[in-house]
Amino acid sequence: MAEESWKKMNCGPHNDEWTCVEGIGQAAADKASKKHWETWMTEEDIKQIASLGLSVAMKNPGFYTPENYERAARFLEWMTKRIHTNGNYTPVGMIEVMNEPVRSGRWKTEATDMRKNFYPKAFHRIQAMEDYLDVAESDRLHIQFMGKAWGARDPREYLPESDLIFFDSHRYLSFDNRIPGNKRPYIETACDDYMGENVYVGEWPLSVNSTLKNTDEFRVDGQETWYRNYWAAQVEPFEKSDGWFFWSWKCVGKVDWRWCYKSAVAASVILKDARKAAIISQCSRY
Image (cartoon, rainbow, N blue to C red; front, side):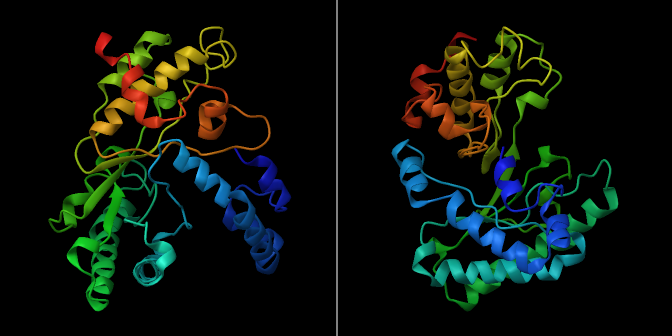
């Protein structure tokens, strides 16, 4: 999705941010990252996002490891303070403590430790900072965790009851091998999705299974109308929860608009006003 930008940062031989920094050195990585951050998302991007009827954007500030629980908690404190004391952060209404953590299937001990120790620590440290800042109840941040469907078991297990707790669900129908390989089941599955209350769908694309995506039935060229219906069929149930974030806003290089909202709008696949998705949704037919 961003291979060209990754190579421009001299990270081409490396698979992730951590190994790139090790490979090119901290100073070079800082310089390359700064340039990328200043040019990848611009004010024009934000204006276009708003013009398309989209009301919120998600920013991922980094990643953390189990060995860094305290460091991550301090970061969350710092971000909480910054959000409440810097006017540029006024639109921020929610902070997620960790994106796509370990799953219980392969990392049962680590996932249990995360739920038991890190999740409550993160929640209380955010709230303690808001207490210190004397933030009004109506202005407090919603605090988000990956939902149970992610596979790290129930995030609520060690958390207190709170209306401020929300959950993140990543819905990739392209990875759901239970869906038969033709168009109708994809629309039916999308229409039947309901993520529950206090859930934002934090990632979802328009792609289908990798074995199907280049077939005559599902290829990009000539299938714009079907993918428009597929988009609306996913948006409608996601809106019945608490909302959604498409993955991702834009791509570079050879564009597959099934993964790039901006490109899908340009291809007339996604409507220029996301609020009209329900109007064109075909879910009532299924």
